[in-house]
Image (cartoon, rainbow, N blue to C red):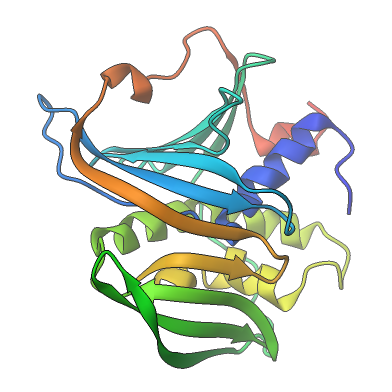
Length: 245
């Protein structure tokens, strides 16, 4: 179902960001020491041209610059369980709070994990191929480095769970049949499952969205301003968009 307004589109894109599978990593960071992990990603949407994504993570925040040329970014406050999508062009911030999923899981929504063979290495870590299926449909094709950045699993789970509550509302308001089994499993009922086997260095979803980890740096000193939201931007919620606010 196509979004009717730009704000509706932004809500769905932010929620769908979890489908693509954000590669998140966590690094130790004391209050007086703004050290972080920086990941350089390459992404493709719907099989289109590749573009760069930068992810900066410390103990409290995850900042995602989905396309480094736009100036827009996503800031996830892990402590508060809130996601902020900052749009520079219209000076707005979409705010998504964590809340529980109340939608009933369909009885037919069963998952299968198919493990393949080792497929090369990434920085010395063996990559194992997996296919993740739901109700007979392939949802993810991933290459996982099991022991690479293990703290990423915890960070992604929190991010995915925050999105899941909002995505459940979207699914509930979507006509029957428009949400695929992969949509429901990946976004609502089993968020973060693509990370259950380890860190996915390469991830391809059912819609041909791809994310590839190119490189990363740990214990990098970054500016605190990167984790501070613009003070004068207008904030709004997905509920306001749905209600025509």
